Image 1 (cartoon, rainbow, N blue to C red):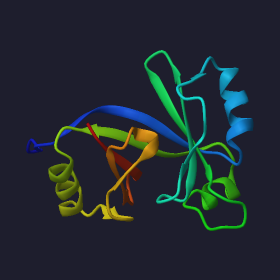
Image 2: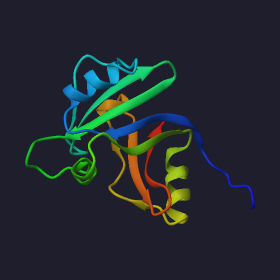
Image 3: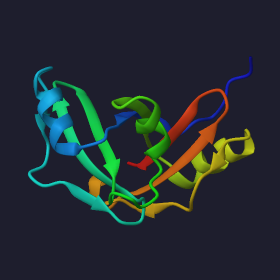
Amino acid sequence: MEELLTYVTGVAHIGIAVPSIEEARDLYALLGFTPMQTEITYEQTHGVQAFMMRNGDMVIELLAPLEAGKESPVDSYIATKPYKMYHVGYYTSDFDAQVALLKKNKFIMTAEPKPSAAQGGRRTVFLASRRLGVVELVEA
């Protein structure tokens, strides 16, 4: 296999689709995760509520629908099995080049890149692959 030039520098977090941030926060605390923030982030542009937690070097992002009754990208995940991995977020040193590389290799961008409040205003983008599922790129 030929060596590919990639700009991914590490795993940012694992996104987990949950029906309720409050309930999930309490459950993940039982596994040693502690909050990285004091308030839930309402990601209007992504259609979700987000809450970051940490246990050592491991970071999870809990994702719940923004509003009950409104369409959200995590709906299908929590409908079939609550508390299901939704995506893996990756830091990238060259955001635009990494997006182009994945698109060239048949990843489908689900929406245009946007600043994310949960990621400190850094740009993020979600891409989907039949083999890898949903991937989030986070501007480093």
